Image (tube, rainbow, N blue to C red; front, side, top):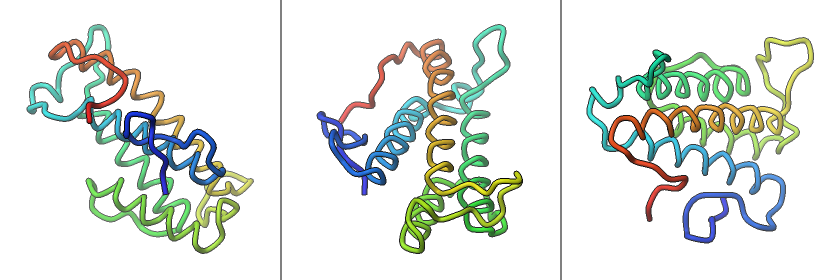
Length: 153
């Protein structure tokens, strides 16, 4: 479903179709964010970078909610279940929507006048992760010096 970056990491294929490219890009952002949060204790997840009060733990909670809001509630029109399984649940929701209507599948509970397609929702999710991966880079570097763009193999 997703392509591989040249080093074997998640990422969009160099010459894939639209679905593989979108999903590969989202998986890459998810992997980078997970790596930036990985291996930290509670104190590391609560660390802030002055003058912001933003934390990696807070971003983790935020992205879990966004995953469920867009891909469980808005796309499939379902109630939100317990948190923390959001990414796994979102992958299942996307696979279900792709099987049922492809990228043109419309959201069932979109709060705006024009209903969005799965294509638009995936772009929104990629943008959301990309925005917060930058924050995570700065915060994680301030915690223990970890830098870089891609998690190790």
